[in-house]
Each structure stands twice: as C-alpha cells, then as structure tokens.
Amino acid sequence: AQTVTQSQPEMSVQEAETVTLSCTYDTSESNYYLFWYKQPPSRQMILVIRQEAYKQQNATENRFSVNFQKAAKSFSLKISDSQLGDTAMYFCAFMKHVLPPSAGGTSYGKLTFGQGTILTVHP
Amino acid sequence: NAGVTQTPKFQVLKTGQSMTLQCAQDMNHNSMYWYRQDPGMGLRLIYYSASEGTTDKGEVPNGYNVSRLNKREFSLRLESAAPSQTSVYFCASSGRERGGTLAKNIQYFGAGTRLSVL
Image 1 (cartoon, each protein chain N blue to C red):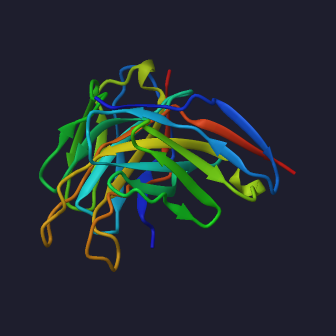
Image 2: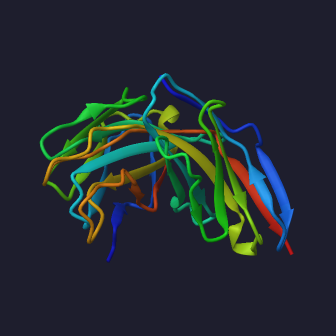
Image 3: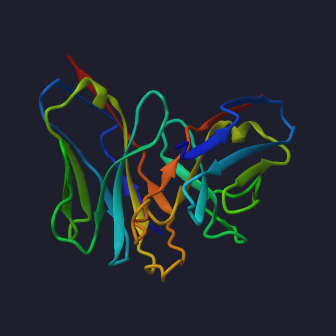
C-alpha cells in the first residue's frame, strides 16, 4: 500500500514571496502519478499540478512548480509570487499508474492523499 | 458546464437513519469515486466505479453501499448512519479530457456534502 506524508501541518508566507510545501511518499511502484490539490475555504478540491513519474522534467504551471526527486520519493510544491488567493489547504496525492486506455477504453486510478498543509498568505 | 454535481450540500441525520448522497457528472467520464474527508486527514477512498456497471471497495467501505446508476450518476448510501460517519463526502470523476485523445488520470471533484450524524 502507498502512503503519503506531509510533515508541515501549517505554513505561512508574505504576499509576493516564495514558499515550498513538502511531501514524501512510500511505494514499491515504478510508474505512478503525483498531484497537488488545493482546497480553499469553499471546500472545492482544485488541481494545482500533476507529475508523471517516468518524466524527469519537473512540472510547472505558471507560479507553481514541483521538485520531483524519484529516488528520494519526494515531491515538493513551490509557489512563487504568493497571492492572497493562494490561502488554502494543500494536499499531495499519489496515484498508481494504470494501463493506458484503448480507443474508447477506460482509464482510472485511486488517489492516496497526504494529511494536508494549511497555507496562509499574509498581506 | 457543471462538471461534478453533488446533492445535498449539507445534511444532519440521527443515528440509525438512512440516506443517499447523489453525484452526477457531465464530462462523459467512465470512472467515478467517493471519498470522505475527516478533520486533520486527507481524503480517503470509500468506493469507486471504474466503468459503468462495475463498483469496487476502496480504503474505508464499511457502512456504505454504492450504485452506478448509469454513466453519469454514482450514488453513495448510508443504510444505518453512525456518528463515526460524520464527515465531508466528495464525489469525483475521471476519464478522457475534453477535446483530447488521452486520459490524464486527473480526477475532478464535486463541491462536497457535509454530513453530521447525531
């Protein structure tokens, strides 16, 4: 079974500064996906960024980037130029690789989440 | 586009009562999931449906049943609610991306149902 650990229950950062959230995971799988989801006070789960384990290049999405260290089983999230709207709970999640679908076929995966990190951005 | 819609948004039950949480998606996704979120914990998978006509247990299935009514709808039923089932419940779906030819294994979540069992 996979486990995901977020060791920082809470973090804070000043607006416009950079913050890094940590995540480690344990798995015997070699192919998998890693995700960061954001949950603002509205409770909606919003995908921030996605990383495929077979890709060595770190994923980036605008102000969000990851540092993926496969050997160390580490997947940290860096938020640059923090904004007040970034205030939220952030969850790291692991998904075991599933076979790619045939045309019209099914692809699915079960997510295993970490405990979450509450990030507060101060003005 | 609505995405994933959950009803109701809030519910209070007494111990022993039953209820069904509804979930519908309009993204033509094959796979659907039910998770629960408890304070201080991440989401945990209750049941999932890889495709229409199939359902399987997740990490915490005890006390729940599910029905994949059709491709769009996936319901979660509590037959005899217990205080330990007080939680926030999320439905999610995944499948081919709109306009794409490959599934990226991204799960899209509903807004959640806050359930209290007294």
